[in-house]
Length: 541
Image 1 (cartoon, one colour):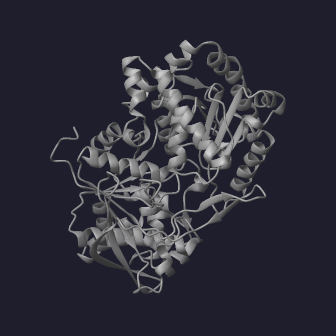
Image 2: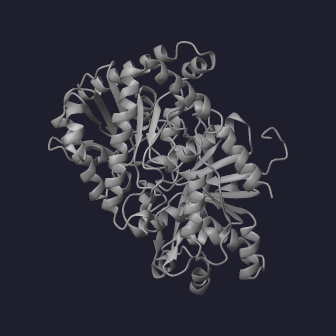
Image 3: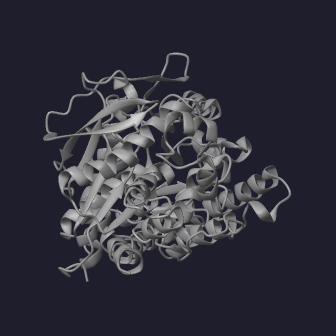
């Protein structure tokens, strides 16, 4: 299907792109997904370009201080591989013209991404594109105005005639207001401009927590100029008061999607009260195999030869990596659990440590080794406390618990290749998708996970991995403490009765499960299927 020469031309808007560790333009899963998607677009030669921002300092480098607490540091990055398009566009922000220089990025096997940059001599507001998700409300709005309004203007200047505008998260919503402004200037009424723009826009929502969906007060938006010529009443009609970026995107798009089938259900329930919104379908996220998956593991699974030996090579590479970074030498013959993701409370990074009577003997004996990594948002003190707790555990169990600081694509790749088990225990249904588990699965690393995000679509308990918690969710308990206790007991049960006995007592079964893990995920959770679904279900009318 992707060979069709008549596919519509797509402009993909995203705040962050994770393409390579050296390019610090990503914070986490949203950016990694966008980077993989643009690599897939290049691999399969589909007519799609990306729009983003050239972040001067990118996201935080988060290190661990001598006191065991995380701290944030920022650096100015220069990227000599960006191509100067020679194009500049202007966006009026706070009544001042902000000039945005347009760079082209195509170095990492990706379809072209056009990055807008305000860090040029013409601007008093040079720091708008300074820090990804940095600072506070006004700066965030200014960044989103550059992405959305500036992005559409950049496309016009580049001569790229997009037929579909894909907003990856609500950050891009001001692009919709720019499409409307163009039509209003041609004499369209507000309703006509809305309908005609809606016909061109599709939207992906990622955040299954209402509070995580960004909103801004209308007086601030009007002061910034984000309304782009619309009246305050028209802004309320689009996004409500306060103005919710997700609500506006749902009303400005002809179709929307959640990023897993469970997330589709969660999103529809979460936004069911919104009138005039687009339908929310499910298109499950996927990964770019050449970036994340050891091809030898796939070949071994297909030929049924050398699977364990290739896995041990990856595990030993991870052990060497940990030793180099932290000075801790883990054991290749002991179970190694990987856990790396953003340090947010609902992901419960330290859940496994809750009952010391159960977990401590396993850590003291070295029967279980756990390698953690993850960053907290710079302004999230609760997330930083989670990191601090895990670092404390690594000091208490120095030979069996490791925390790798400053989580990035390199750490992610090492852990999803070299671990034996990939642990995931969010509070269901608060994880939208979670692509790290897909990377682990295709590398023969067995998932042991709550039935959240993508895992309900992939798991076959005891055959290609394990589930725990039986799909119980936040709504099934009167308090979060009750849910956490239930999931904890379920985790320990699976760990003690299935994972450990299989690893230490039935190597044949373990290797068979590794093979099943790879073969059951490598096609459905690859970027090719995701691209095909976006084209067939959303881009093509």
